[in-house]
Length: 245
Image (cartoon, rainbow, N blue to C red; front, side, top):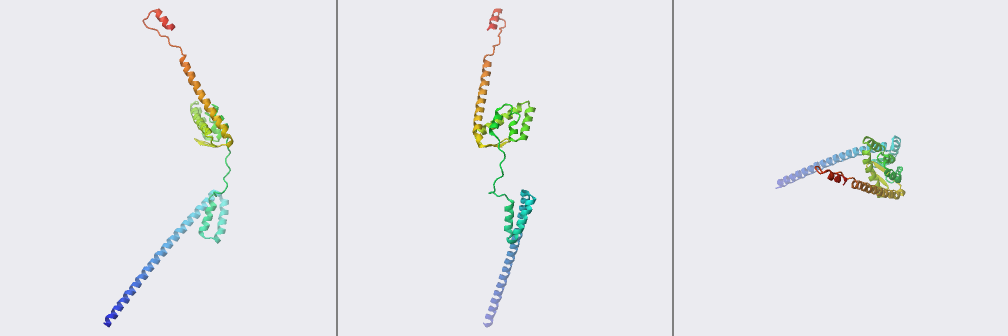
């Protein structure tokens, strides 16, 4: 029995030692996997940080110019001594990107909406592209003038009518800007009301011209002389009476 008890104790000790060895092996493997995972994560973060720094440097060079890029790089290099990599990257990106709180760039020179409406109301200015030349759209103005010359004023009239409709609609809406079919401009707020009244006058004049042309054509067709009707085979007197009628 004593021998059996010793044998059981030795077996239990061996099993206990085997279990400890297995646990140690498993723990070592887990630690090794964790170390590899940390190494991979660190390598990925390092690559991402390098990529962000390169992108930020490119943004600085493209947005500010070589001189400003060198100044920003010097500032970042001076501050890197007292900050970590993440803060340095944030500094580079903040210096490269525009500040949303910074004042906007000075606006472009505004055009007169009254002059534009007057150009649209003059029959000759629209087809030859003077309205687009006034707004600064030189390319479309030249294209409009070329179309007008090549089509013997027909294409210019159609294009001018489209531009006139756009400008009149914009003036009737009292808008301070226009951006349609190449017509781009900013207007003063004081000229929206005069341009609105000019647009109303243009609409009334167009309606009156349309009514006048329609009435003139109707009256001309009503007063046109009737054709002489001659009845073939009728006597000479009947022919004369028919001609008189």
